[in-house]
Structure formats: structure tokens, C-alpha cells
Image 1 (spheres, rainbow, N blue to C red):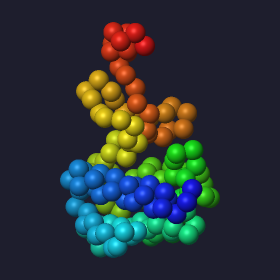
Image 2 (cartoon, rainbow, N blue to C red):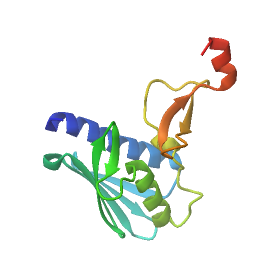
Image 3 (spheres, rainbow, N blue to C red):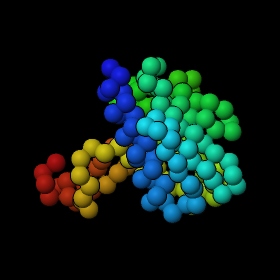
Length: 147
């Protein structure tokens, strides 16, 4: 992947984070610092920083728990050490920082965008990888459409 492709895809990740936080209703201040840095500040004053490392083609998360580096593999951003998926890891860190798991959005806002959403298409979690992003057609609709 060349640098311009990386920047385009990684900036879309930052955009998705902003959209999810806005939609969650959580009291989290978001500050975009240039094109490649996103700071999330929580009510208790703690922060999580997400930044792009274009030369290394990585997205980094800096949190109280440490630094985490993510690379793109098979269309997903995964931790270089643990193999954890980026959005699941970020969700867990944000839930811990916010102090209230019920306020932080579950994996729904992080769902990969694979086409327009409609009432008949639902996001699901892959049972094997426990990763959101697949789309499923409810059984009734699938039968009607001949799937």
C-alpha cells in the first residue's frame, strides 16, 4: 500500500471514530489535530490519542494502558502484538476511560461500511473472530429473495 492510499484509508478510520462518538451521546471531547491525530478527552480528564504513522503504515493508540500499534491485514486493522482488532480495542479502552460501559457504544458504530444500510440488512458479529463488520440478511428476507 502506498502512502496516499494509507492516508486516505486511515483518515476514514478517524472519521468513523468521530461519527461513533458523536452518535453515542457520551461526554467525550474530540479534537482533530491536523490530518493525522485525534484526541479523545473524557470527563475525568484522561485522554486517548489516535494517530497515524504514515511512514510505517500504522495507526497508533496511546492510552493509559500503553501504546498500541495497528497494521492493516486482510481489510482489518489489527494490533501488531496481540492481533486484537482496532475498533474492538478502542471500544474497550474508551469504555474503561468513560467509567460507564452502558454509555459507550457497543461495536455497532464501528461496523465496516460495505454498502448502504437498509432496514433489511443488519450488522452482525462474526462468531469465530468476534469481529463486527459482516452484513446479514434476516432469514425471512433471504427466503423471499431466494438466497
